Structures are given as C-alpha cells and as structure tokens.
Image (spheres, rainbow, N blue to C red):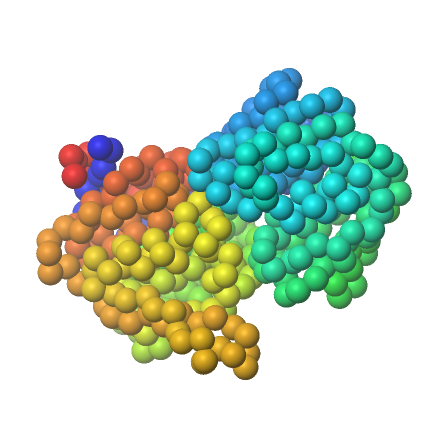
Length: 421
C-alpha cells in the first residue's frame, strides 16, 4: 500500500513556492481554445492531472473520451461534444459514474442535443450523438447543484446560431466559478449580459490570443493552513495577485482571523505569521461560494481547537468523495468531531449547519489518514504533521490538482518518507 510518513520539527515554515496555473482557469481556457478552432499559446498552464487529461482528450481524435476522475472535465466535455457531429462516448472512473450529470444533460437535450445514458439514468457514462435539431436559445437550469453545469453552457453559447439565454433557478452555489467563466470569456472578447438570475450571450466569435494563467489560489490555501499551525511563517508564493478572479482568494480574509498577514508584491504574495499571533475561540463561515476551502479551514480550526460553525457544504457530497463524511471519519482520529446540526435549527433559514468541536490530539501515536481518492483530503491533512508525525495513505492523489505538493512541502523542511502503513 502506498503511504508516506510526514514530520515537521522546525519552529518556522519558511521558503519560496512556485505554483503552477489555476486548474479551473486552465480548463476554461482549453475549452475556449477548442471552441474557437484556433490554436494559441497558454502560458503557466496547470500541470494537474485534470488539465492534462482534458488537453489530451480534446486532441485525441477518438470517439471514446475517458476523463477518469475529472468532474469539471466531464461536465465541460458533455456540452462541447453535444455540438460535434458523429457519436461519442464520454466516460470516467467508477466514482465519476456516481456523480450526477442529469441537470446538464436535460438542459442540453432540451436545447437540441442528443444524449443518452449508457448505464444508470442521470449518471455517466454518456452516448453523445450529433445534434438532433436546430438549437433553441432559452433554457432554465438549477443553480443549486453545480456551477460547472452553468459554466459548460456559457462557454458553448457563443457558438450557437441564436446564442443562449440561461435562466438560473434556486440558490446559486459556487458563484465565483460562474464569475470566473464570465471573466475568462470576456478576456477572449465575448460580450455577456448578466442580470440577477439571467445570463444572456449572443452568437459571436472568440477572439483568440495568447493567454497567461494566474497561479492557483486553491493550492495556496494549504500554505495558509501551514502558517496557522506553525509557530512562525514566512512563505512566498509566486504567481498570485491581489485582484484575482478566483473565489478561493478568500483564504486571505480567513487567514486574517487566524493571525496570518498577506503582503502583495509584484506577481507574488508573502504569507506571514509571528509567534504572538492569536486565533479566535469560535469561527463561523458560509462556504457556499468557496466549497474547495471547507477541508482546509476545518483542519485549521481543528489544529487550534477553534469551535467552528459551517454552512454552505451541500455540494461536498458529490465531489471526488463525500467530503463531509470523509472529514468526519479522519478528524475523529485526532479527537475532533464534525456534527450536522439538528434539522429544527435550520428550518427557518433553510440552511444546513455543521458544528465542529475539539482540538487535534494524538493519544494513539501517529494517525493513519485515508485519502478516499480525493486530492484535497491528502493536502488538508498533511499540515497536521506540524503538530505530530502523521501517515497519509495514497499520497499520489494530489496529482489531480497539485502534482508538486509533496516536493513543495519538502521545500519548507517537512520530512516525507515512504512507509508501509
């Protein structure tokens, strides 16, 4: 079994991290390049497995597309292939076959696509045929499941003969990712009108140009977690900017609550914490716009024994794993409890709350953490090694978004060695 033991005995985390491009931005730019039909240079493209697989699939020339674990890749390709002639099969890993796709398929079929389920209705794999009719230009789509459905439709909209009006129903989740799609499309000359719950995109051409992808704030968040746990920190992360289009840049404000200071210089940030920094007794946060930060902030609270009250976690159950269940299981190993609050407390607001209590302790020696085929589980738990040696099983899962994570952790003098646990 693949596993590593991680230890950290330094008083200060200090070093320079050169992050690759944002996976989310990279995947959108790759889709726009494919939709434009014109090649152009993409600088600082993400080296994540998801982006690499998307790039390969877009250039494979095959009629069978296997995206493995890539949820974003699957959803973006569903919309893209719906425009193409011929028959294509779109599939993925066993976990991908458990992740819902029905709202996007129903929207595309209503508009004029011809998509069938090959196994279980509502889930991958899909058989995507040539469009069956002229495309409509109006569709309603539930916005409370995945922003990727909306982004997928937005990106193909300029290529439709009559454009597309997308009406969003229900409460929008992960809205910064919709804003990201809008911003990247605008970078390529697309005019978009958004008013409340309606997105209007007229037929138009992508104006191609070489594009530089900013580095990944989701990955940078793990260094805020490290800074919060160690006694002192001075970590430089390259390729990040104050005015980011990535929602996970919100980690800067969250970090401030835990005594972390962010300094912006040209094309990079410094993450600073002094030995006299304090943390709150209680931290409440709604992650509806930033679900990829949940695990990071949860562990941040656990490391300090900060009581947490979290909401906006509803999309976590359909990620690479059920992240709520996975967090509960692994935090329990260090005496921290994550509990869903009783339904009667959320009836009036219609918001689900989760209470986290306990401080990470290690009465049973070195905990062995399971990663559930989820890159973010591995990366959020690794910084706990600044408190006590830990073991991470299947550390290779970080390749999905951050292949150099363990190498970069070593740069900060974390000791990482293979073990048999």
